[in-house]
Structures are given as C-alpha cells and as structure tokens.
Length: 369
View 1: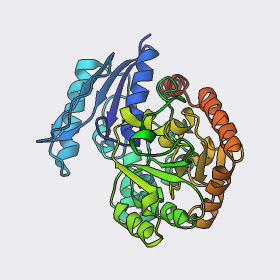
View 2: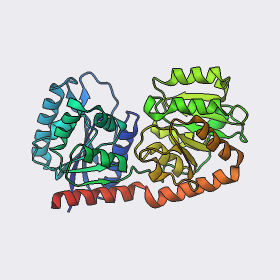
View 3: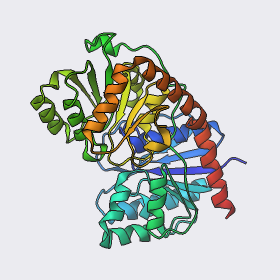
View 4: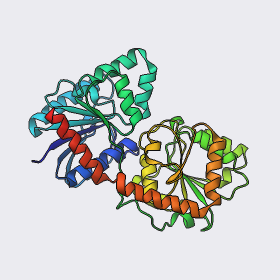
C-alpha cells in the first residue's frame, strides 16, 4: 500500500543548507521507495526564491506572513485544507518553525530536529524552553540525525518514540572523480588541498580552523573555503595576521549541484564544528573519497571512525587540529587509505535508499502505535 507522506520544511532548495539538502534527498529516496510525497515549504510574501522540480513529488510553497502568530495560523489553515484534499497518512516536520502549525491536525506528526538551534533552546531555559516542550506535546514520534539530538528531545520531557536516523548521501552523485577546480584556482596537482565546506558561522567552528591554519606555516598546503557567513571577516583577519591569507581561496556560497567538483578538488575535508548532527558535508566528502578531520562533537563521531576514515580532535583546540591535519598532509598514502575507507563506510551505512527505508519503517511504527 502506497503511503501518503507530507514533508513540511523550514528550508528547501534552492536554499543552501543542511535541512534543505536533507529534505530534498529524503523526498527523492522516498519516491524511489514508492511513497506518495508532498513537500510544503512556506515562504513569505514577495519571496523571489526559484522553483525546484523533483520528479514524482508535489512541491507547494504557500505564501505566508512571516511574523507570528500570522505564520502559524495561516500555515495551519493551509495544511488543514491540504489534508482534506490529499488525505495524508503522516506529516513529517523538518525544523522547529513550522511545528506549531501542525498541532491539532488529524494526521500523526513526526518531527525531525536537525540543528544546533534546537540545543540552544534547551540551554536557554525559561520561557523558550517551556515553549519548545509545549510544541513537542503535539508530536507522536521524533527522528533525529544524532544521538545528542535524541537526548535533547528527551530532556524537553518528550516521552514518545524517539530514534536516531542519520543523514544520508547520494553515492551516485558524490563519488571520487576528476575536477577542473584545481586548475581554475591555480592549484598545482601536487599541492595538498584542505576543504572547509561550511557556512562561516560560530557553531561551525570556522574561527578555530583559521587559528589552526595559523599554526601550520611550515607545511605545504592550500585551503579552499566553500561557504559564506558573518565569520568570514574575522577568519580573514586571523589569516592576514598570520601571513596565511594567500594560502586560502574563498569561493563563497556554492550550490549543492556544484559541490562534487569542489570535493574532488580536495585531499582532506575539515569539520571544525562546535555543534553538529550527522554532517551532510562530511558524508558528501566521504562519498567522494576524502578523509575527514573533525571535532568530537554531536554526530561527527557517528560518521568519522577515528584512525579509519579520518581523525577526531577536541573542539576549540587549534593546535590539536593543526597536528591532525599535519599528519595527513605528511602522509599521502594514509589519507588515500582513509579516503577509501570513508567511501566504503558511506556505501554501507549512509546511502539514501537505506535511510529512506529506515524512515518509512519509523512511519509505519508511528501509525501502528
């Protein structure tokens, strides 16, 4: 029997980000598993965001007033009409913003809390924490891409089913291949390239990565940064003060469709995060045969097997990160070995067909209960 699934998301392509990428790929994989998929991505009036086609899925972008309580009231009205028209079996909400609009609807609601923003709500305490706890009372089941986020939802008092299902990666689109980017950027074939593919914001630890680079003046390497954000200026200041700015190439924001070319121009991918779920960047890099150097936070240890697919380091310790990067720069055979192990790991554990089947089973369990 075909399951009718409605994915309600705070982000969706062409928006660049982890939630957007996750929902798009999950939807595509669910369609391949014969689910009937509808995607609802609310936008504000006047939005000029381009349309996206996902074969086999229906995509709606209702225009809403951004401010509360109008956003929640208007989205709830829209969803109630959609339920009557489409008779969904389940609603799966991605991101906290749309969640309030699903309370009281006559369809079971599953919630995925993707980001460190959810952890910030827990630490905030007071009214913000209580409001999140109240939102979760309308949820029947929770999925999360890291054990840390499962623990967080429990800390809010959620007593229903909750399980960790990691993010996935499309191993047919992300795989080891050649790249024209090195030549385009003037990078020699024998230069070791470190890739930072992150939004340049505090929680991604990019300032600490810049400080690690400052510790590595004696090593031969280049850095490619794919991403932008408010911390770019501070990164630039740190690198300029260390006379290392000429080692770094800032690409700015890169559409996900162009990222295979970026990963395949690199030798090592860096995840200096202070908080993280199962990093989509990490998975995409691993699928392209890159070893990871990542911090021991959140879901990173779930995907990075220390000493096998990369190296784990403590967060906020640039000397430790510099040492790990230095080891892989000095040992090309080791990083090739780790890169091959990384590719094998994602094929076995993180491919989207497998993630979609686990998600469908969670849907069935939710309906059966």
